[in-house]
Image (cartoon, rainbow, N blue to C red; front, side, top):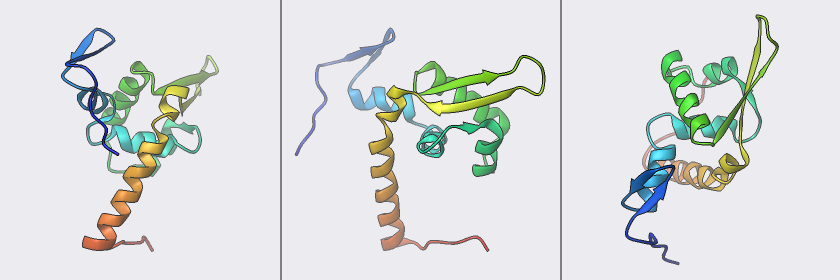
Length: 124
């Protein structure tokens, strides 16, 4: 099965892209966006939980990427409480959940690459 981009250009939220691949990479591309979505795919998480699961991401980068994912409609942010300590929960939106099959395909492909060309390392 071969899938092609439709149209000469595509437009979303006032932005014009040369094809749907470019649009998709704008929404989920970069080093961290897909990793964040992966960690939210099974259940909502607090900011601190995401930090623990991704120790090499800086606080500023995590915060910026979450804001961008929220702006693009992939992630929702719910704030509970008005006075500190407030509780903030991040979760995939219905739109974000449509990306889960892609995340699963990326994970499977990554596992295949490591099986064939690398090695799995387990923490002690």
